[in-house]
Image: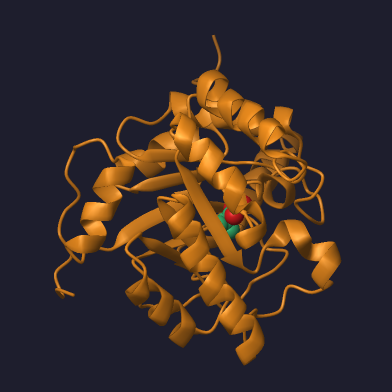
Length: 274
Ligand code: KIV
């Protein structure tokens, strides 16, 4: 890995382009977005992959988990995001129970994401149990990103957001699931909150790009939830989130100054009036 990161080109990012980035040893920078304004800023900054994550549930809708997000919510947010993006690859998360029932339902919902919201790929959580569905989607031309490790849609099964795959049994299962997803045709894989050594090993062993979130520095790319890295959503601060700003503080300060100015008649001035 070169110490000087290559500048992103203006070329549209595609699933094939991401594979080429992995082969060339170029790190992939991914972030989440849920609306057009944020998506445009990310795109202008050179972010390669924009995920319309079901994390919208927690960081925008104020819910405790991602399980309540609906297909309609995801279609709405994804359609806002794709309107703001020119270069990045836009991936839409398939929400809980939109793909688990059977492959037909998954195909229909993934198809809606592509046709109605204009995303270029979908993401699904799970390993071997969803591989036949992944294959079905890929066969009709819908690229699929896998998601293993901490899978927030299964929070009620695990009962905790702790680090996954720390014991050898779960690590072996994760290795097998990663390979199965690649074999089923997934174009990339997200690994969430697992030991860095396992993230490195899986990234090395797979041909498809592995994008880590709390999976160490040796994955092919990194993803964070934008509201977390901006310090906009501050309810939790997992160790893997580096805060690049304290946006909640900036906003809070602005709102407080506005309230003060209105109450003290300092806003609006003559210059701000007609
Ligand atoms: O929903 C989401 O934002 C995600 C990322 C954490 C990868 O799945």
